[in-house]
Length: 95
Image 1 (cartoon, helix red, strand yellow):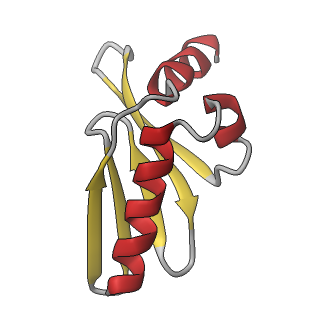
Image 2 (image 1 turned 180 degrees about the vertical axis):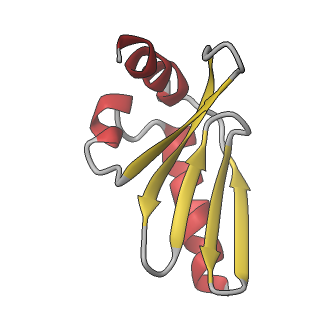
């Protein structure tokens, strides 16, 4: 359980510290789930950054990194200092 907590905290800290640009961060993303309103306007996104053990999602709507490994779950809040949500909104609106 500690391993997943540490991994989730590390990802949240990387986003908060803006160690990368949003564009650089998105280069290694495995999947994107769009969170939209009924009228198809952007609300946020969930970005899959690790898969297969554990699965880790970055949720820009809740500003939370969510990690899952079997029955274990870990969450960590982040501050989006790299502009990830803005970058994802731009991608969504261009598609």
